Image (cartoon, rainbow over all chains, first blue to last red; front, side, top):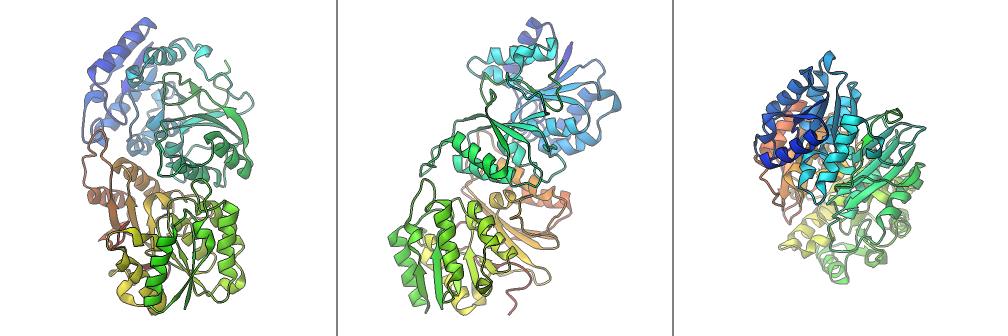
Length: 271
Length: 271
């Protein structure tokens, strides 16, 4: 099992890559870290061309089984449309893992025919207890260990998991996943609650909506100059009710070390 | 001339209303301040029902010529769809002014057939030099004074002006304005530059795009943990070029006292 690491958004450092290499080795996999993950150009891990190029190299490499996004941040949207149109036919057996900003790319490559999964990334090594997050991602990639999965994934419809702001930024664009009839899991980090309310408005007022929704963790919510006045889960439930979306409770995903794996699409997790 | 003030998003205080009343009187208009503008429920100037109710009262009041949104913040999206479907026929001669979060409502009421304008609001009285902002809004509302207008409004196509995050939150929803063939002016405040880049991605990757775009002020941009590495105007120009939108330079709008008036739609400013 060879796992290729690229950074479609922001860069990681050598120490992070080394930790991920060690966890991969312990799980019985070889980590192939593309040097692009250490590149830097302004906000990004190299220019759009450099990031897209590294990703296309990994997609073309027949020795690579999984592509693992090094971290989120921001930027995978800027290359996802282009990369998705250039996926080589021989890449179609590969799988891709990431979350947060990598959601743009997950959606694009899932639409292009690859198997993709929301799940921990190498940069999670920097979190408290982050080793367990990496081990969880590797358990799914290397052994297909169902203990790594979000424990209540729908069995009667396809599942998708996204950061809420990332998902809302895809509305109407070619990257938007087809959520019709699906179960959507959303999580959020470091957004004001009013901003999440606004994002839920946008999401639930679309003509095409998910059939059901579950709420991952909404963490590190900044304090606003006035309290929002509503619990976050009440907010999510309210938008679901208004839009006729079945609210199915909390989901074990988020920007933290406990973040679980959610394979996209129709029953991929039913092996 | 009677101008009705309501607060479809967040509340204002008595002192702000008093300043606005004084400026209106100086401009020869009577300000009719709905008591709802002082209401408070969590983040909002009263519940959705209370805010919608006040707005519908003003829309139904035949003695009111203009409806002036008291301030932005967040929340007009939560009532805009409902209110737009209930606009009484006798409201169709009225006009509406606001900006920032009021953009949701401007778009909804413009689509419902009212004349609307992006422009300063009573809460701008709290800004340094804010009196001039209120006087500018009033000069347009009371006298149709073209000196209040953004000075380079397109004469060959309809104009729209929005806060960028507000506009992006309407994508795919019933509130989204029809920007096809239009000139779009966008401004932003207190958003990370990467978030604005993401919003511009979403806006410019839609199947329906404005013909041209101008950039208002992007102010109070928070410092991120890494510099974005690109001037804001270069960013805007890049997305326009990529999407085939004519970039027409800077626009004199923003979250500040210099914010100019932009009437929506086809040549409303050509009197």
